[in-house]
Image 1 (cartoon, rainbow over the protein chains, first blue to last red):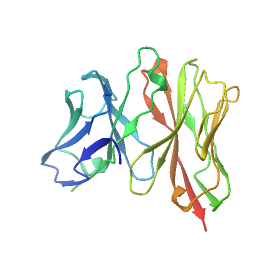
Image 2 (image 1 turned 45 degrees about the vertical axis):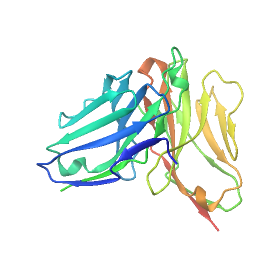
Image 3 (image 1 turned 60 degrees about the horizontal axis):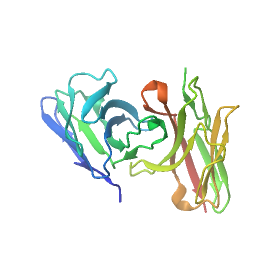
Length: 117
Length: 115
């Protein structure tokens, strides 16, 4: 079983809806990530949180709004999405090491399959 | 420029045989980590194996080994004794210290194990 839990597993929403994706980890990791993955493509980084602060935003449209309420939780708030935003959304976490974070693997959840109608 | 290149879109291997999945990378950073992930059709991304840029020994994890050739900037994954459950998409990925430790993925290789 994965140690990073994502809910819901599937989500269908209209373009005028507001919904949220949730992610939880209890591994004590202080870095958390959102990735977007289209079918048959590699995951693409959206956001990185380090110690509950947003450290990387990969020029993601404002209709995606991340939130990190505490060290275990990561949310992605969705509003006014487009059909092309339909994808698998993956959450991940990793250790933050003082000088060697590049050595630390990301641990992924099972993802949320989002369909925008 | 592509940071991670996986040149094999798809591979077939006979059950119980070994298979090598290719990965080359491009970086000017001295400090980086290389990772392989497996993604079955169900979607979860499973971490398999890791190699650090300063590691002199090739990494091994059970049936997985990483053939790390630093001068050639290659980090190929070798799966020994293939099983039907190994059929999946495999991604090579890299984290660079100078790029904020972002994990960047290659395009992936689909592996099919034949019985």
